[in-house]
Image 1: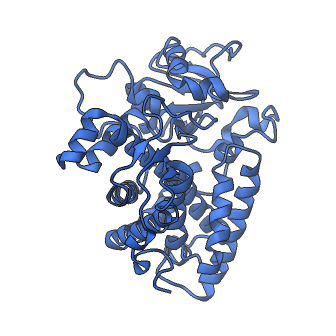
Image 2: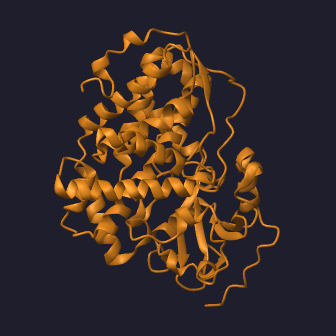
Image 3: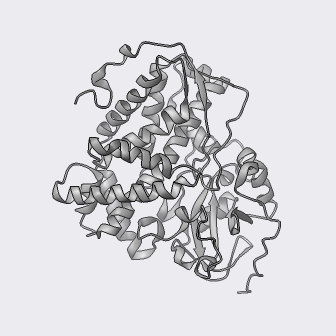
Length: 416
């Protein structure tokens, strides 16, 4: 095989900063002009190949012989060429979790992950999500206005995961604060990650002494015999991978239902399910815009594009889902989108994530049925960074209502 030419990144598009957040589609068009994959700067001084073609993305995601998830293969990082404070390291630096492993090790960790997630009762998950959503709605219902991101979409998955992990009530506020910092795009993200890891370590010790019916207890007692470090990073992975995607999917589904005349009218008539709106949102606004990081084990080609070994190759789920080469007339009911990724590292909690989003959306629409976007003409500004496609804010107004219409026993803490 002919050796690919050397890396040339000068003048390549930037997948970070205000310009990308304001017009990501323009950057994806620039990348498409390079071919099925193109070079981009994903953070200051950090470059990667980004796959924008749907067919090429599916090829890569299923080719475990050529492409690895182990970021210890990242040549620039090993050679000290990545700034130690780079904002992408939190998502790309190696950890002993299912996200960064291949082969037998991935199979062992994925076994534990799949088994533990499968033990979550769908009925219980709906009830936890509904209680969490009602708790948040009760805080704003009398105000007549809210930010769907800060007051609702961001917070619902945090409260849900705190309960699924078996976090004691007295620690829930700490966990939520750590998660809020963790998902931020600012300098507090690193401290939030450290605080969250510390809380998970405490939780693992607690559940070793007092097991319960929760993800932490199931993970540390699983037949895969995980070490505390592996268990911590597995829990970190499942939570970190669930927070912003669930928040973004909730927000985009609500935005579609409130802004799109066809969907809003169908919703009012009772002819459209939230699930179908979520499906369209996943196609058009993939929550994980650019991720699924892989590394070629050696110099190779992907659909004719040179791929040097040891460089990060990201899948642009956002660009692949909107690839102009996709068949015309493809229904949004199709599940061929890559919002959940594909291949052996496909999201292990699709059903659970769908339940959280669908229940959260249905609950807020039920309670705030007259809700309207403050500015229906504007597209929400996105949070900065290469990985997530998540609104910064989403202000809404509604007629103020009495919080008494939500029974105390229906919200989190109401039965204590």
